[in-house]
Image (cartoon, rainbow over all chains, first blue to last red; front, side, top):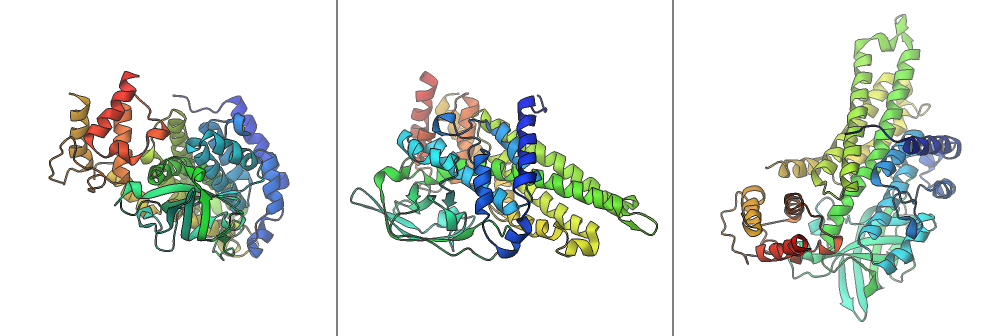
Amino acid sequence: MDFALTEDQEGYRDCVMKFARKELNAHAAEYDAAGTFPREEWGKAAAEGLTALCIPQAYGGLGYDLVTTAAIMDAFGYACVDSGLVHAVGAHLISATTINLFGTEEQKRKYLPPMCRGEWIGATAATEPEAGSDSGAIRTRAEKCDGGFLINGNKMFISNGPVADVVLVLAVTDPTRKSLGRISCLIVDGNTEGFRRGKPLEKMGLRSLPTSELVFMDCRIPAGNVLGKEGQGSLIFGESMEWERVLLFACQAGMLQRVLENSATYAGQRVQFGQQIAKFQSVSNKIANMRVSMELARLAVYKTAWLKDRGKRAALESSITKLFVSESLKAACLDAVQIHGAYGFSREYPVERELRDSIAATIYSGSSEVQRNIISRLSGC
Amino acid sequence: MSAIESVRTFIQAEIAPSRNVELTNSTSLIESGIIDSLGVMKMIAFVEQKYSVTLNSDDLVPENFETLDAITALLNRYIKS
């Protein structure tokens, strides 16, 4: 067992941190206030290779394994203060990864090179108004028609939805089946007739991450746009979730480090009652808890990535990772506000934005409640 | 223990311990609701670990896990290859 990153991996991390601080952070607060997608910074992140990390070189990617990718996303989440942009890149990588895992050669050659270059933005559309964590309740219907499928339905809260060029849509293709075989995963090109992106939703946090409803009205796609096989959608989604819970939550482990460092620095500078507030145990205990969470979050992320690199299933480990990292980050951000006092509550410091950005992580990618259900089921309950 | 018996025992003990159903080789597992999506993931992890195989993404389809016969047929392809 070796816990050390390689020299190359450390080098990639250093590059990404320098790049993010120099190129991506200047307008983060403005994008948050306006709720706009940082298109220019997206282009810079793509040029840096962040949209291509774990995609094979044969399809225009950088060909990194998942541990290396997680290490880089961790550094990205640490150094880039625009968490909406970080999430947009992560969500895009998940879509590209799913195509890489289950796509045909033709699909990979068509979609992955422009996705790696960041020219086409990817999204995955599973959630519906009545189907959140319960993907079995999906109602969007894809009926067979001449040479393809006709999709009708609505998807909701889709990350990258308003800017998506490639959407992986989970839809019912066989309503006669009761469970797994009902759903297929379909690739919808952004310019397909009958596909409409909703307006960006107003959100509490991750405001620079474009998120919207997607509407499919007699949206006709060719049969060749089925990802994997018909009826394989639920299993594709399950595998995709394991990758998602590494890619997105590696970023959150990095953000946790930033919150910790900023809180420790502030507590060391702020003087009350004649001493640094860090000298008060009620404050230093919060810093200690953040440190413990950060160390354990990284262990969980990298272990799950290590398993996936070895071709193993990691349903349990990825759920533990997702639950622990998201809840730890939210707790750390709440503590950070408390440590910063009134400054933490004001918009003068980024602490309040980080708290708002952290909340969604306990909801998307399966809520904390659902993660506990999964973990207990996989532990024999 | 044969592969089919191992999988049968695993399902009865780990996936559907509270369901008192007889699992014949042709009992519908997914469509009848004995195994849900998480149960399938659990079973895949079990067979991959027990038989030191990694199932291809092409084989992750419900049909391959619908009955004990189907699971055994899938496994045999990997064990023999």
